[in-house]
Image (tube, rainbow, N blue to C red; front, top):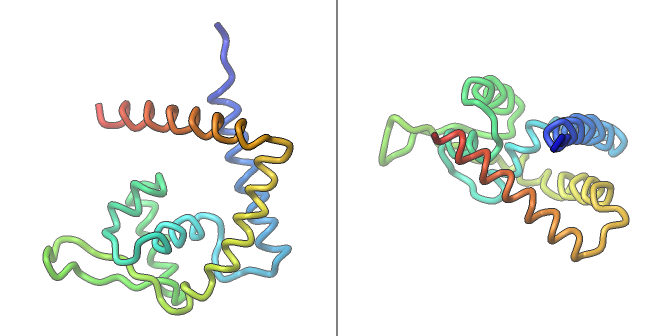
Length: 145
């Protein structure tokens, strides 16, 4: 059986990234870009987490993340602190500036969601997200092996 799922997922990600940047520009949001938004999203869910946890949640290699975090720190979006319990770990915290951007991010995210799920029923969305979760699980298992 010939499948195109991997190609389609890659294409959707590329298109989604480009449209996300376009929506940011349309809304005059220049405080962060798409990849930085993913990092902020993780920290809005839980502040004060290790860099490794952000790397895992965003799917970004720590080497790529390090440069982005430095830029975000210079922009006043995050701060890094050594973990008091384990000095080998660095924890990431949102700044007040970043906390204030959450509503703007949520508006962009809502617009993206409406594009992704246009003409889907709630049942189709549940099924689709279930399939995506299974694919993610399969890939994570492979990465662990």
